[in-house]
Each structure stands twice: as C-alpha cells, then as structure tokens.
Image 1 (cartoon, rainbow, N blue to C red):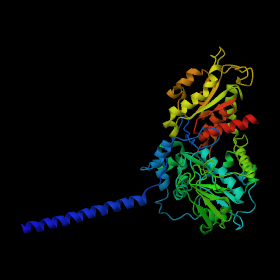
Image 2 (image 1 turned 60 degrees about the vertical axis):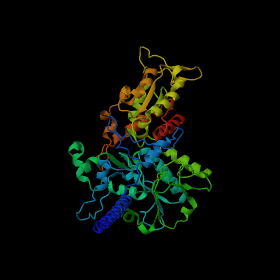
Image 3 (image 1 turned 180 degrees about the vertical axis):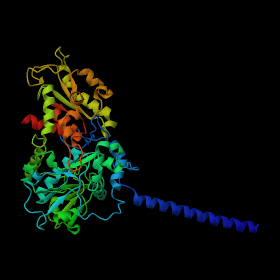
Length: 515
C-alpha cells in the first residue's frame, strides 16, 4: 500500500507540473498574440466596382445637410471586429520591397504622382529648406470625399498656425482604410510605386501581371491641382508638396529632421479635436488639442495622423468661419481643371433638357454600410420623394426627353411641370434598371434617367485621362464625379442619408444654382 501511495504522490506532482506548464504556455501565447495583434480596421471586404471598373469610394461622414447619423450597431460591430485576414491587394502593398535584398537606390526614386510645372505657381519663395519656415502635415485615408474633408481641415490649421502645409497627393481608386498613426504612416510608405516601373508593361494585360503590379493598378496618385483650381488658396495659405512618404523625403526635400518633428498620434478614428475654445461639447471626439498649444510648439514640423471629420477643427470665431467658407468654395469642380469631365457632363445635361429642367436623386446602395442597410437608405429616399408623386405624368408621344418649354422642371406655385417629370438618378448600383431596390421608384416615376442610359466610358473623354507617371487611366475613377456633376445641375436634389457623396452633390448643387 505504501508503494501505491508513493506512486500516487508522484503522479499527482506530475499532473500539477503539467497543469502549471499548460497555464504558462497559454499565458505566453495570449501575450504574444496581444503584442502582435493588428489594429482594428473597418474593412469588411475589398471595394466593389461598377460596370466601368471604377472603385466606389464614397464614405459616410457628418457633412452638409444630409442626415449622416450612422447606425450605432454598425459602428460597434466595426469596432469589435479585428481584421484576421488582410485583403490580397493590401497584403501585396504591405510587403512590396520588404524582402528586397538588392543594393539601395541612391537616386531616391519618388512615388508616381501626376504633377505639372504649372503647380509651382504661387508657391512660397525659396526651396523650403530655410529653418525659419515651419510646417504641418497629415496622413490622408479613405475615399476621395473624405480626403477632401481632411485637406480642408489641414488648410485651416496651416492658416491659423501660420505654418506651411505639406500637401499630400489625392489617391483615386482603391481607398486606404483608416489605421492608427504608426500603421497608416507605414502603409503609405509601402504603397509607393517608386520601384514598380516594370509594371507598366503589364497595364494592358493585367491578368498576366505579377500580384504586386495587379494591386498597383487599382489606384493612382495625383496632385490636387489635377482636380481643382488651387490658385486662390495658394495666394492665401502657404503650400508645398509632399509627393512621397519615404522616411528620408522630408529631410532631403525640406531639411526637416525627425528630431524637429512633433507627432500628434491617433489611436481611434475620432481621437482628437483641434479646439479654439474650452468647455465645448466633445460630441464624437475623445480628447482636445488646443490651438494655442500648437502655436507654441517650437518644432519646425507638426505631424498629424487623421484630420478627417466635420468638427475636427473648430471654427468658433468670425475669422475662422470666413476661412472655412472660403476653402469650401475652392473645392468646387471647375472647367479649368477638368475640361474633359465638364464636356461629358454638358453633353448629357443637354440631352436631358438642360440645367434645371429635371430633378435628381442619389441612391447609394452598393457597398459597406449602404449595402448592409440598403432597405433603410431607400426607405428614407422614397419618403423624401413623396412630394413629387402628385406631379407625375405619363410620357407623351414625343417621349420623356422632349425639349422642355420652360427651364424649370417643377412650378410649385401651380403644382405643374413643363413636361413629364424627368428624374436623373445618380447611383452606384451596377444595373439600376434591374435592381429590386429601385423597382418601386421606376414604377412610380416613368421618366427616370441614369448614367448607364447615357454614357459609355470607352468612348468618352475620361477614357483618355492618364497619369503619365504610372500609366493608369484615372478617368475611370472620375465616373462617379460625372454622375454627381449631372445630378448637381438639377432644379432640386435629394440625397442618401449617411453619404458624404450626397453631401458633396448637395454642396455643388447650391454652388452651381446660386451662380
């Protein structure tokens, strides 16, 4: 019996040791996983594309007068979701050049940003290396409209801090999702096309291209001057270009050293707000950075993470409100910067009947939150359209697009229309006429026109718009702008809730109709 008792004691000691070892192993695995975990990113899937191949990149935000209150459940789900698998296109970008063992290129090849000599007009004197010139910068992310909002906020800060803005290029195509500061900075460096010259030979046969080339074909970078006339801004606010995110770029180009840079890092999408007053409601932001503290910073360079979001930069004084109004008006599409886009828009608007001879709507249902809550989006849009239902007439023999006898689509004083009510519907749906979400609208309004009915990308001016630096046809990324431009020239416009694109169309509509 004593022998059995000894064996039992030994067995118990072994079991205890195994249990302790198992617990320590589990704790070690948990700790390593926690250290190496990737940041939370609202990235449910790669962006979808329309029949023209352009990426649908309109992101939601609180902008303009469109209802942009995002469903709380969707936000919470996005925050809880940890990205377990990086989309293939972004995985390639993150590993581009990471295993390159070749000798460093001492010529410092730069990213393939579309720039022109005329961009240098109205820039500050000198080359930017003088130590008396102080700077701010930020890291852009998301689609075009969110990048535009970020840029306006950055320009406001540059003016109010009396610093020069290092203006990044706009990225069209596959959007860069928000990341924490360090991760976003790293991603911008790794998505460079500086060493992808060999990919140009595969542009017309992308199916046979290496994976790193295929991913690089999904986006392109332009200076903002390719889309807007920035001359008025440059004459008021100091701007220099940041065409590359290589860590040595700022020191080589502007003599800005890492030790002379003050970083304001974000760990949440709506982390900090730049405040010019105390004790104001925080709303969606978690903390405040005060304007007067930034003015006192001695470093030559202040580097922000995200500057996206309405309310990110407070403008509580009359002077700051005037500055914001001025900047907003500079980001209206103009013929000077985009003659090809306006040529296509003018032709379609004439075919519909001319500016103001139709009403327009924007139905955003194709991706992200808008696809998930498409029923809610269309339900709200349907309710907003009820005021037009009493005005509906069946098309006459000459059809929906007969020349209108008057320039206005609707005469509200007499509750009449000058012809059957024409509705232009801007949408990211691939096939709107066969989309079940639109069945009720097509049945109720017989004279609906969509871009699919009036436009062929391959035969348009947009097809010839190419970034000469990387060979990418960026005109395909402007097709949504064409949709919005046509919608903005209607007599009245109704947008989709939560959509920054709807807000921007509404803003354009106000600018074009008032002028």
